Image (tube, rainbow, N blue to C red; front, side):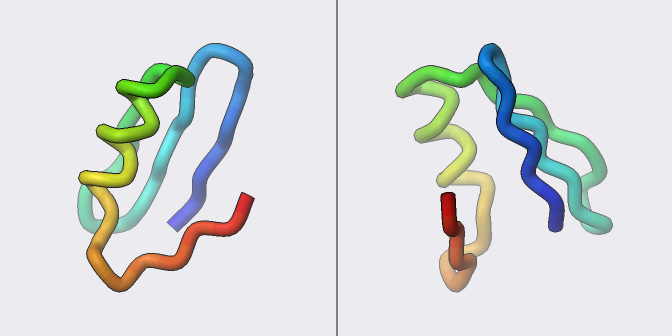
Length: 44
């Protein structure tokens, strides 16, 4: 899984779902967290 964070968007890529894009704001961050598996570990 690869996560690219820019000023406007988060871009997530994984083999299961391909590319997903989320706005770089509170709502986009919440959507990003909902899309990750429960056991995912995110370090920023």
